[in-house]
Image (cartoon, rainbow, N blue to C red; front, side, top):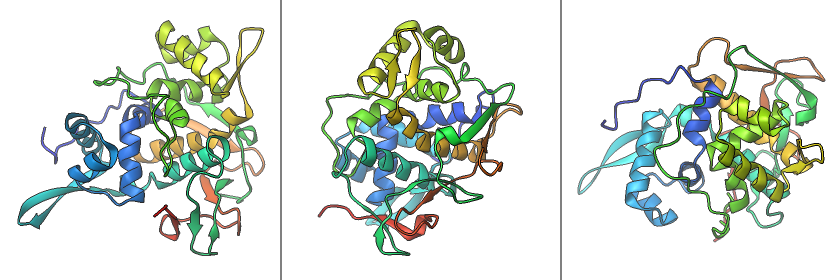
Length: 306
């Protein structure tokens, strides 16, 4: 398949299931992070910045082009070369990536990650989740979620064609995406387990039935979530979200929002999320902690270390 062709839309999956297949990988998230923060656009740029093997990088970039997140653009540098530019679909991921780092700043690496400058007020935005209708701050506890009749996670698709790349002993990244958070984000099964918890799943057998996940894989993910203090294992055998886990709803909200806006899916497979306070269909926004205004992609930038 060449860089201009795309795989057929996997319409047997829910939009959220497709998003987990696309984004549930450590290297994919790091490639996107560098594209947004460092404006890397070339194969050599990502290879040198991430220390990733050329075969793995080529596979991930091909997938991102196939899914319409990057597009190939030719340019001249002595001879014709190609760079990868974010499409409009790819640019819409900015809020998800900012939400990931905001969660890390609060729960994983406080005081270690770069500030997000809000150019409208000139302050560190320290973004938090808000309702796009009433602009009030929100948490998972402030929402009502109703799955459509086909909105299950049991059909999120076959395993990826490559090995799991999450390593808890990986060195910390000074611009974000710490190893602990990558254990949630950089693996689609982990993200699926957490999504199931947000939808009310509590017990091993219910996670297994809802996700169609192998018992050994589920055991591993639940154990790590308890170690990371994202889940609390109760004496009755249930797993409950801790405050740290509940705070991850901010990331989940933007994942769901992007998926259901950008990806085709069968009718009846969507999640309907309502803000309980104002009764509006939930449209997540990031709000600036300094001035309270919604953040826009062109109005924010990370102040990176020299």
